[in-house]
Image 1 (spheres, one colour):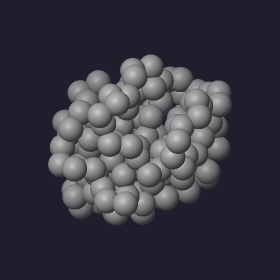
Image 2 (image 1 turned 120 degrees about the vertical axis):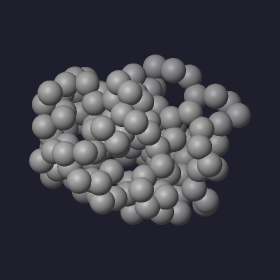
Image 3 (image 1 turned 180 degrees about the horizontal axis):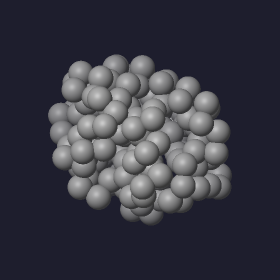
Length: 141
């Protein structure tokens, strides 16, 4: 499956050109929007069922991933798959946990960790990465 077509709402273009969609699950998906091949859902509880391959990463609201080693592995898989597939990352609102995960993807893509939050705020959402501990997590990723 091909990647996302150009820019659109919630699409982050990484420096390598890879595209990843971030979104909030509390906002309905536009029926005309392309469907991902793979989704990672960052929630404290089990995510809703989706008709594409998906993974649940336990990550409570305003917090950090429950299992940091698993988070690193899952985000590495997202980064690898984003080279040629439509991949999305989502949490409840699409800002804190999603922004943190997108900033970690930016680090994997070569953005220096101290600059990754600013990169995601500039290219995804100015309110991405909501808490001091989320910012610290990205710097140490």
